[in-house]
Picture 1: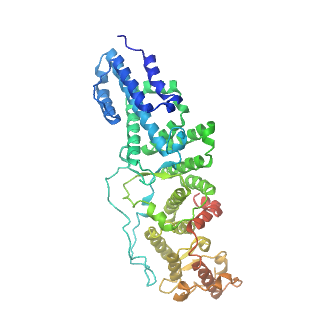
Picture 2 (picture 1 turned 90 degrees about the vertical axis):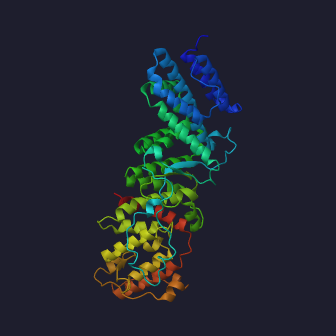
Picture 3 (picture 1 turned 45 degrees about the horizontal axis):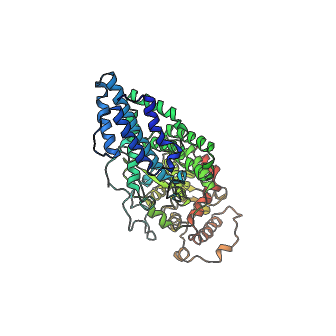
Amino acid sequence: MKSPTKRSTQKYIIEGLTEKSSLIMEPWDRLFEIMSVVAMRCEWQMDKTNRNCGEILHRMKDLCRYINNFDDEGHRKYKHQVVYSTLLIFFKNAFQYVSSIQPSLFQASSPSSNQIPLILLDDLSNIYGDVDIDRGKHIHKRRKLGEGREKTLSSDDEECSGKGRSRHIIVNKIELPNSIDVLENFKLARESWELLHSQEALEKEFTRICMSWKTETWLWLRIFITDMIVYQGQYRKAINSLHQLGALQGAQQHVMSQGTLEQQRALIQMAACHFALGEYRMTCDKVLDVMCSVIPCVQDVVKVQEEIPKVKPRFRKDLKLLPCTSKAMMPYCLQLMLACFKLRAFTDIRDDLALGHVIVLLQLDWPRGENLFLKAVDKICQQGSFQYENFFNYVTNIDMLEEFAYLRTAEGGKIHLELLPNQGLLIKNSSPPLGVLPQEFKLQPSSQTADRHHTVTRGITKGVKEDFRLAMERQVSRCGENLMVVLHRFCINEKIILLQTLM
């Protein structure tokens, strides 16, 4: 029997990847049946055992080791076997991975087309770690920050070097019930890709086939390739891939109906890549673009805490599949911003603006950010003063308010705080304010103070101190405000100053 040519072999395979395949029952099973027929006609090394994709791929890896030991005809024959068998495993698993994380691309063929899309991002759970602070400092009788505290680090699971091959993907099983299968699809597709690029001869043949099939126009394949590059930690390459993905999406009308969601998805992934590259201003710029287009979700802060995995040790560089919803994207964006400002706020150089941004953002996961807040307080005490005129606009956390009230007392160190607009001009020549905020005002704020109109027209300590007292009283009454709305307003209103801080 005459063996089929390379062109006829390719024809058999590509028939299973046309658009009509969505109308075929179990198209991938049918395609593997075609592959069996091709294998027999091409006299490939096969056995009669029905193997799954993992077993086939393992066999192709073994065969690949000995390809160069065959003569020219055998080398060519088994090279084609490795390429086409691995190629089929690659496309099947990449397709199934993307159809699970973004089913809207396959509404005609996916029974779960209403499922929320997921996006692969670096996990940021460790942003509250790496805090070395003496917890005995700055603890006063009103504070309970040292009680009932969970550990900030955990040593569960295996160690991770941060390299692509050993990274772990965190998945919420409620959001993705078939998470085990999806992660297996991603693993097999990635390993298939690596095998196809392990030898020049294999890569050349694979590239030729992709060009012939015009795979550069397959949107789902570009999504997988982007995620794979992110997984590998090649962030600069991932940003370029995201730009290609955006151009591809713009050229396909059926994707434009999703519009904003697709743009947000790409912006968040770009922001995470820029952060990994140390480009913090670009990170913040992309994040703020996302925040301008999302609507804050009215949700309890506790629910946000429950969704965030335990903090991992610093050597772990895990990833997570995050739902493309405001409820999930906003906390992640705020965590990215916190990570950027944290690096600037805790350097030896004084930067009250960055430190103030950190304090505002630490409210999100309270009390998970306690240690980092205590480190901020420790730095303020070392400085002896602190200026952040947006404090009363965005800080509504009762523990933080009590701590700042305490810092002005003799027991707290008589720290010089400039937290009101233009306060610095009023008290530049005055001594630091004294006095202790009474306990009853912190627990039972007066309802009348919220409507009291007050101004400081004289640059005297007494006036400034009273102004601070009234501002703090009103702030306590705001502790019940929706935190996501407050932080969303912070990002929108302070966009310019946030970006300038990172210049």
